[in-house]
Length: 266
Image (tube, rainbow, N blue to C red):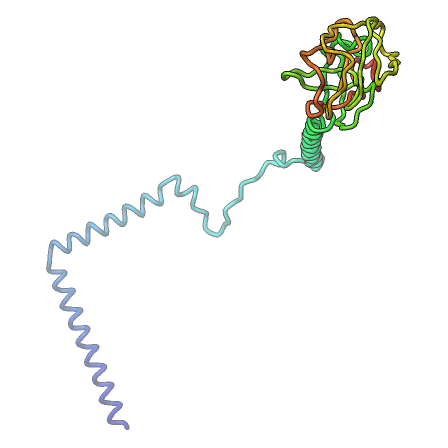
């Protein structure tokens, strides 16, 4: 065992001696080269100058913390920090702003819904109409606003609105399908041979009547006359004649304008 250890130790010593010899020769060769020696000197000089500039620079001396001391932290101005009262006030304003916009949005949605429902009702079930002309005075005057209701069953005395040549007319029902109508020279109206009581008119008149009387109302049609008998153009005239049930918009039931005359219509 011992001879082997001595051999390995001798080999290691020999390799170290060889390394020292090579390193020594390399240094001697570098030392003998004047160009390389000059480059090394210049490099050392530049390093010294750089270190000197770093030491004497004011910025570097200010930024570089002193040995043995910690860098001081910047102080914050206490006045920049909001108080608790101001924070609470700002929170209240933000809550109020959020609640205000929420209520406003809900109100707008409600108004849109109500308006849409009103338009739908006014179009399909309760049309709102404005009176034009004087053919229904004294019951209805010009510029009054009334509400009609969709209906299919009418009786003598009902006021209805119907279309004729793309115009909306309002008259009073005198007779229905199958009934006989007659008007004498004094303007008295007879239905099925009986005198019709008409408390809603101021004066009786034959008016513009050019149809043959007495006459029978055809099926699904109605005979209508305006309350202002002397000026109204209605079923007594061949221009209008009997009104088809398909052309009837609805029965006039309420007056909504003017406010002083608000209420049901008879």
